[in-house]
Image 1 (cartoon, protein in one colour):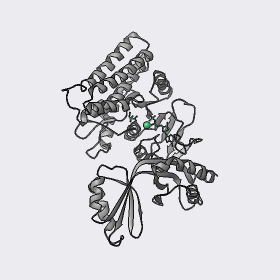
Image 2 (image 1 turned 30 degrees about the vertical axis):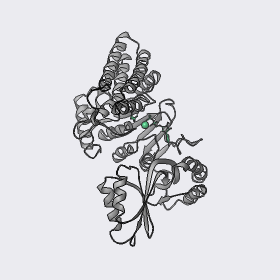
Image 3 (image 1 turned 180 degrees about the vertical axis):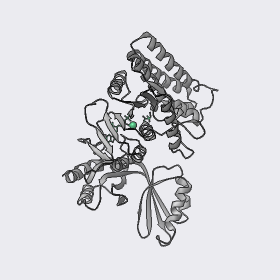
Image 4 (image 1 turned 120 degrees about the vertical axis):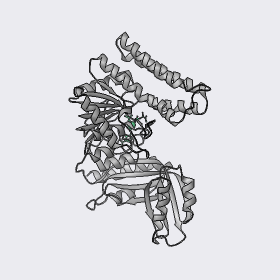
Length: 445
Ligand code: ADP
Ligand code: ASP
Ligand code: MG
């Protein structure tokens, strides 16, 4: 069985939905198709919940109306028969009525579970419209609700055992079905409320499903021909990599390569399920295969993650005194805040976090151990590749490229697959471009 995930742009218009149907029909064997919401839908649903949260009901209704207009046009253009058009119109009306039921004075308050239910409507709409289209073109498919198998635990982590068991049962009960369609991104949490896998989470859904059913392959169909060697949003002339290892892909996804959700490589890697990145709008292009494969050494790709905060603790006593680092780490553990990067010197330790929810509390407690400096608006630039001993010259090319850009922290040697630099976010684009010029000349040869 294969898992095929299509992102927001891939299902963003009636034409692209028809294209997706063609791609799906052209792939042999049994499949689970995972769909995102149509592009911009999740953003608008978030806007709607923000307006409702601020009791700005007029704006909330106006935004719902913009969405309704868009979906009405989709229904008019996607479906051929009066019958399906009526069925689809009734469905979207029901979904938007549900959202509107929260958008007036005196309506049920939009607590977190309700907010997530509103945001979940994007994937519910896209999957229903898609299966209605499949019906119309006479391709049998079975719509699975992600709420029946996708679950996170109390810590917000996917409950892999539950996902594997539930999906296994569903598939066993339907031996004739060879095309399932389900929602990416959305799930239930440990208390049964509607939740989600965070923005861009449909990739994560696909990977979790692929790992749960031990799929033959996970295909992530998007609007670009695979993982590029640098961020195409900021750098010209980037190119698609034919093959990358799970480790490289995991580093790049975690450190900002938007093509993949930060955690999405891990389940596939754990079960050794290859992940193929493909372009919906250019299906002939090879894309990128992520696998347990041997890759050339040197820098292979660069990504950048914004929203980083650097915390520097200067010790009152000798830094490396027994237990000092442990005391510091315990504070982060207490506030469930993970550390991305760490560097030490004789008198100070600097570390980075990407979640400032408890920054004030953490800073206060750290002050018990030394003087604390906090810098926000930092960016981690991650260079992924094989930096094992045999590679020479990679680090020289990295630092030569950065001669005009101040570097705040450097991490080298934590693994063989990553060199990371912390810089001011305002220097990010310049750094990505400079590294692109300086690094790939050396490592491509
Ligand atoms: P989808 O809606 O299909 O999930 P996303 O917008 O989340 O698509 O991801 C695809 C986008 O990721 C591309 O259009 C591209 O701009 C961006 N991107 C950022 N870094 C990379 C990279 N290294 N390689 C390819 N795409 C990247
Ligand atoms: N629709 C969700 C989002 O926009 C999930 C996804 O597209 O992967 O974040
Ligand atoms: Mg995405």
